[in-house]
Length: 271
Image (tube, rainbow, N blue to C red; front, side, top):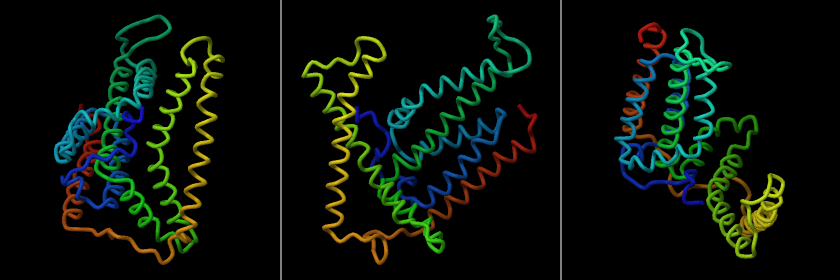
């Protein structure tokens, strides 16, 4: 089960994407999300698709690893496709009685699906496969640090995110062990009605919650034994530093986003 989990799964490498500062990745990802959600025509989405292919190439990560991130959103992808498919207006392509597939509906469904796929792939490239959870938490803490003037707990937020990312794979592994242990005792989760299945899964949920609380207590004791008192006065082994690579990559990235948005606003009827 945990082998299929993409969250926190880092793919080691020395590509351009790996060498970028994690703060740069976070900022550019936000810009990319905005650029992805605005266009509603074919040409900007096509340019975004080409740009995503370019990011995949320079990341030097196997396509199989990248596409595996789509498995977790297949239900959302199919649901969004169907909603847009049957809610469009214009010339009718296929009449199914109550449901009608129109030309605009089909186009919107395809564009929405492509937009969601690109959003997941690009997010996986920037934040998961090329950035370790520790780097991500340091970047978030650094970006939120100016808010400390209003007593915003930037270090604590980053610490909680780092711990959560660290223990998600562990909890999935723990769930897998509990399911195997309960199955060896005769538990069956695939027979009976809905309520019987719910009762079967209680034998998993209860031990999992007990395990979570035990791990949390052990972690709290370990942090207290090491005199952890927050981020004040703490130093880091690897300090984050912007480089020329971050500047050049950011400039090229921003120019590409501006071009895509330009095609959306200045050429809305083109394709």
